[in-house]
Length: 115
Image 1 (cartoon, rainbow, N blue to C red):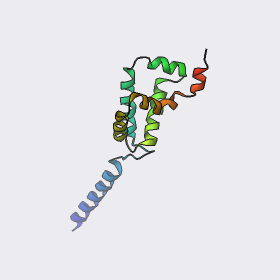
Image 2 (cartoon, one colour):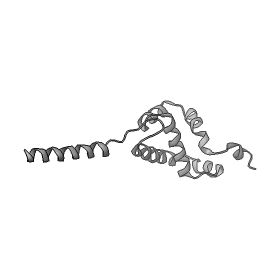
Image 3 (tube, helix red, strand yellow):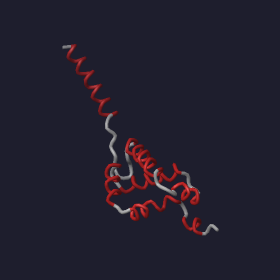
Image 4 (cartoon, one colour):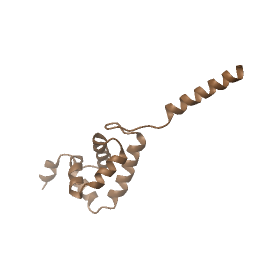
């Protein structure tokens, strides 16, 4: 009986740890760290292939990392997970996606007023 009780306690402890440590979930406005990391990684890889991105960011006075983080945070505010955000952004035209991320360039009025 004592062995059974000890086994039960071990299983209960293991189950508690497994449940508490596993499976971070994402929700709109609060993605899991793995969703945010995947967003940042994939957005970085995708934008590095685009021509003129670094020049645009330089003109806007924002770093590449700041821009990517801002974009992923905007997606997090609007979608329940990175998978959903990625699917929805794939459905958008390039113009629609660009407009969605426009605020991440900072104050565009300052950018257009530069001479």
